[in-house]
Length: 175
Image (cartoon, rainbow, N blue to C red):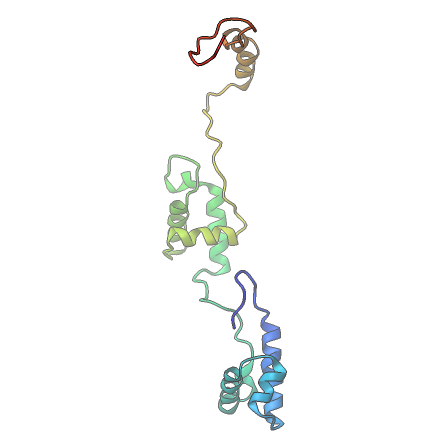
């Protein structure tokens, strides 16, 4: 059956459904009837019945979490966070821009675990860091001088619209 993309599974609810099915199976209710009552495929009930027979009700308890377990501990994540706050210059980079490649390098240096840059981005999101683009302005930039130039010099040099009635240089325009 599966879940729609982006919808998280409620593990407690799933466990409750399996335990309800186990209770019905112990009462002698047929697997097809259990499947209808619980709202699952009969094959799922059959699998649960096998697990129940092999390991008891304990075998139907929730698995915990979906997916592969993280290779980083909470202490590792705190170390990565501190490294991110120190900046990429601490790793020997010339600029203060964190890229996915640099974050992957930081993780390897801090924790000894090698991650692909695409996965390093996931860790950044887990830590609450978002994608930031550098401003891209020169260090020598003087905003006051730029404002003055726009107010005075630009007004003098910008093109002014032609007055009505002046001849056009366009060959397609009819006079």
